[in-house]
Length: 116
Image (tube, rainbow, N blue to C red):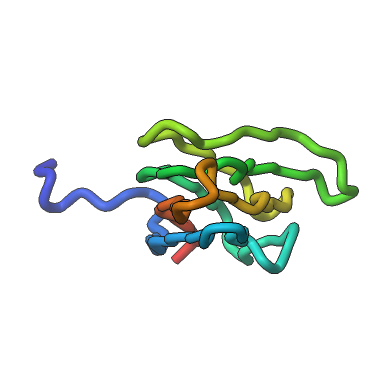
């Protein structure tokens, strides 16, 4: 079988969403202003592209009953968090500037996967 004719056994739909969260001097940026949530997909991942002058931005995954399952700060580029959106909720804490005289920035690529 050639690679050109190969089809994955379970094809799906992947969407990639770039998110930039900015916190102005003296303020905060809200990565998930809706709080704990589901995206309504099968899998969701967050890939840190970069952050600058930022503190906070802690990603947390919760069980449906509210139990915290995992919490991590994506602070190195290429750090990835993957979760099963069908069975968990997720949220991200606000970011704030480390140096309050300059803005803070957090760039993430969120990828969602659903069945075709």
